[in-house]
Image 1 (spheres, one colour):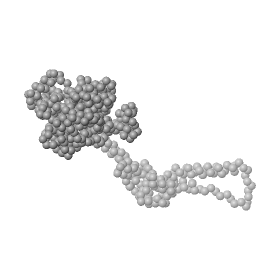
Image 2: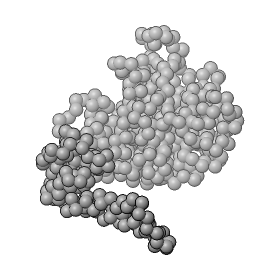
Image 3: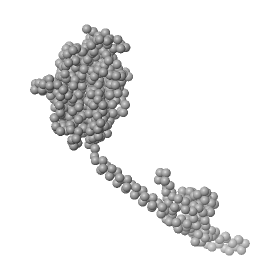
Image 4: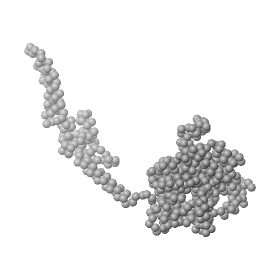
Length: 565
């Protein structure tokens, strides 16, 4: 029975609400050493994230983003669900930035995000990066997302043909991404109409190695969602699987009474010593969980190699970002001295939340949840988010996860080092200033020659000299050269030396006449020698009574030197 939908208000009253039926699988591929992909699928939320950053933290980026969004898997929204989805992705982006701030080794990490949120009879879509979303409706299969890549921009601008994109050397260059790149990344957002029978495929770019017609044929012809996801991953492995591959299959369907009464279909193993919410509340649920574990049930879409690879790496890298280890039985006691108490609480609350509803969690996010290595940030841990958003409870007072800061050195050591540095800097500045006050120089003040105590420099707003005395010597009475020297300041060794310089300016108009006098005398001697040399080589002229006596050389240099002395 088809749902008649009012575009303005959604499904008509009395009709059964729409939900997602889902399957997911993630595989590390044949070349990569770890799985950087993460995905979550539930009745109202489906999200794929493809992490990047190499060994530094691609798995941390995707796992942190997906685990930060899983609380959106619900039907009740007071405001606009589309706005809530966009805000949550921006919040996940800020979480990645905080993780990098805590652990600089994660610098440069990022992730793509492609998400569907089914709420209020509408399907809300958000996308950034090159993961993809495809829709099969009424026999038409088409790509809904747009790749935020360099080659896609070239295609949009008409500079590259679509068939040339796969061989382009920069086909993997992303233009937009979530993570340690942009404080407010631009998302592609849309609110789409939805109806029963719609089939969606969300996938990471690892599926791009499978021919498009093979992907479309598999999605069209394979009825079972889990089988469809398995087939797509197997096709990727046959194509060489040089990258991680993650696939989420979603069918839109009407909710049935069986869906309302069905307990969680996928239980994430809890921390040692803790009990999942479903087991704690219902003995039947506990028996069901025990039966599933005894039967060695593997979550649909999650292979053994995925669990092994991602579990060995996501836990290690996420632990670098401020995450913990498996808890011991006593770690949930608020009075415990376990230094990783807040992290154990985060992992346990997350597991309880996941155990309360049907879902598939695969890739690095599943490995992080299973190992307890949840990427967290002090002051906004997963435990706090779970308490306020996932379970809709008030923020618990005195939450240990809010006060514990992982990997932070002791505060008193940091304060002691800072205080020692400040003391050294202060002493150095004081000694430097004290030395400047032993110096003097001659300069200008109010168009007169003056003596200053200190040096003629400034230290920011601080002048390192003070006026000592102002003389009666006017600047315009000095020769131009001396005026320039005084304006540029004449350094002195002490006050007596400064007074001597002033005396020289008063008597001779120069700052150091005893240095200039020998120069002047040498010049005069040189001139005299040059003039006398021809006379000595020529015969002496006959005396001429009528001739005037030759003038004697000017004694000015000698007078200047004597006056200076």
